[in-house]
Length: 212
Image 1 (tube, rainbow, N blue to C red):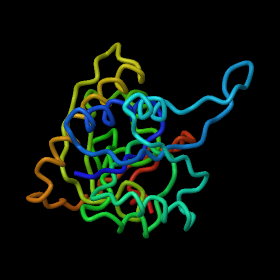
Image 2: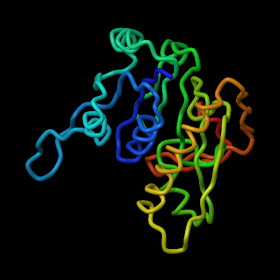
Image 3: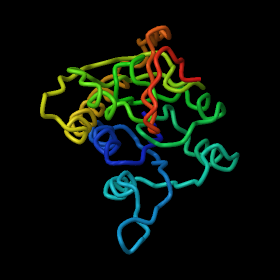
């Protein structure tokens, strides 16, 4: 399958590698722009950019993915599916509706729990004993799309957010490959919005939100 992959941090690297290893045609990687880092404030590329270059996958780094030029550039790649993992920007409707199989997100929680930007941190902070990966069909809401697949892992008493992140990124890679392999026969199951909770990066967590 022709895939455009969108992701930025280290969490998004194993799923990209899994897609390449599984034989999918990853025609482009869309990631955030290089940022100053470290004491010298040197421009540092995102982890996904480095992984893409190692696999000889073309990299596209738009400042705003919502811009018409950005959408046009992604359309020109001709994706059948767009796979997203911690990209870091809201996707516009034009992009969500572009590929044949839509935009498929790898989210690090068992939705509808912990929608938002920091699901792993909040699961650990709140003392959850299990968490997992949700593969979902993206819509215009914040992690509100239909669920294609889920799998869970335990959170050990001594696990840090970093430990859980590493485990979930590997699980996300294997689960998204499984979903894409049977996407023709899959129907996305609606989320129960009454059970939704939020995991905002600002530290505010609210219950009952739909993420709109």
